[in-house]
Image 1 (cartoon, rainbow, N blue to C red):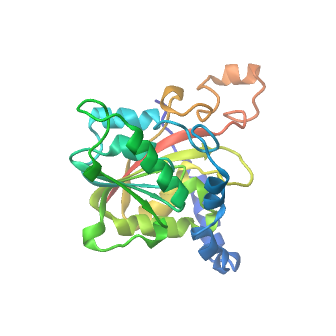
Image 2: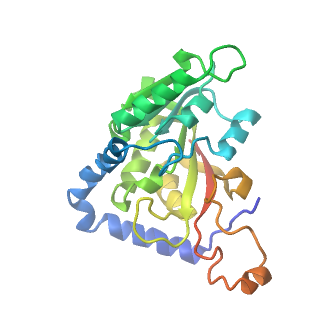
Length: 268
């Protein structure tokens, strides 16, 4: 897999721009509170989202499946914010790992419960035990922060990118508050690349570093995902040489096509 080295000059520029944004009058408007409970997700689900439509991928990310199969996910309590139909929750749930799927939409939670109920019963069928699966409607920003409610693993896939820049610092503060010392935050970073508007809003690896490192998170893995580890259409242009890129007349590294990276962060 291809690893990325951040240029110091770019890092400083990004840190300065984010700090300036958070101190601006715009950031202090009502948009912050409105964005945390934005009704657009409930509206999307109310309009009807069938499996495979909009942001419903019909399956967990292949990279997450690989991590589960390798046994590299911490045991204990896990959280999937913005869980939607709950594919990732059902993959992560295990006898030694209670997994909470959280979504703002009651309809999304009902769809997740329906998916769980439809799974075949019996040993080896892939249906996790009921006491290892929790689906809950509510806001990520309202989660309790006391010791008894800490998480050992949080999986953020297209949750961060759904949030406007105005609440990204709040996202990081909440992650720091709910993850237990020694726990892990896994960020699937998409869409990386030049993109206007949102959601999803464009992200870069340095966004996460800027927000998480000052709060006691250490990255032990940041790398671009290979196409076979991504959902269809989220791998960007294949990893090609500069010569091949010139032949294809690509003006940017990925021809303007967003791609996906993974970050794994341990809370000190």
